[in-house]
Length: 384
Ligand SMILES: NC(=O)CC[C@H](N)C(=O)O
Image (cartoon, rainbow, N blue to C red; front, side, top):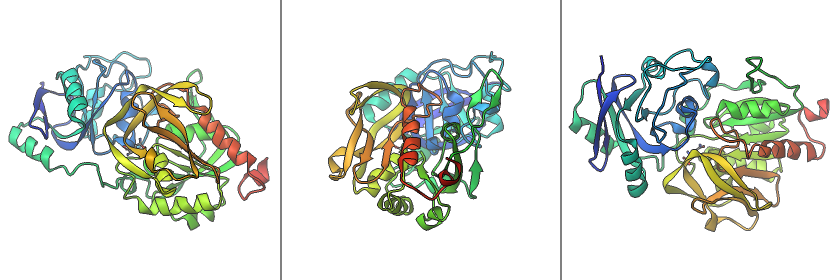
């Protein structure tokens, strides 16, 4: 039997629809994502922790859900808001229908609301806090919960979502013809900081010959250096980068020691902060899979996958940091490189998942920076 659901926004707007997930109440910042594919990857992306995601594409769930497409060990988005869920998924890879998968995982989700109206509202007012309620409905309680959510500014979530234990990763990307994940022989040892890492990032590093040691967000620089990495990777992740002082302190040491360092999204923002720049909260952020970004070195425009609500403030960049990429949607910063250390970072998602692969050469650049580094300390000495 269909259960009712509502979405209540902090400005008092209430949308009524039907539940397509678990019953209950869930709060977070409401953001819109314009990608037309990849709902499962979006829902399992840890960077969406404490966010209620609305997808502007109207039909969500058509291809069902398959374990192989998870970007992390659980659903991290706080809830899902869509226009329409098909009655039956159709895809040879599908193991389960989206509503059942959401219900099994306790994720609150709403369908049958006007997501175009919601998106236009968020675009005009900026991201708002909200509450999703499904099953037993109490509008006042939902509004109160939306208004009580403190907002993402100042929230350190990286240390909440990250792995508790260090682990090794060597598995490459999925070869659909063989329906198997393919491994490459490792040539470099990368220590990857897990601030909320997406698995496809680890897969793209592994595919390029990296053996990866994934470490918790609060691992000290000394502990990482003891692992003798050829390079350090700074992952994506949820929340505000500014309170992550532990990571900022560690990154300063890698930069000073000229260790090849590559950051994505939150990792990009943290490299910016470690370099002395500031970050800011954007009006409604970038969440989608078709954002044009210019590579300022080549002049080329790339179509990119994006998911961020904070950004590096270009005006605050010190002299030793070069701007390498800029958004053609709003001119905001999309990439930096240090001029005195082999460290660089990108605001969007070169690993896509979902999205285009235009910026995947950044992974090659990281591998090249490890190869180009003089005699070092990691596996490279033994294997190359
Ligand atoms: N995908 C990410 O790493 C997001 C970074 C950060 N939490 C932001 O919203 O800007």
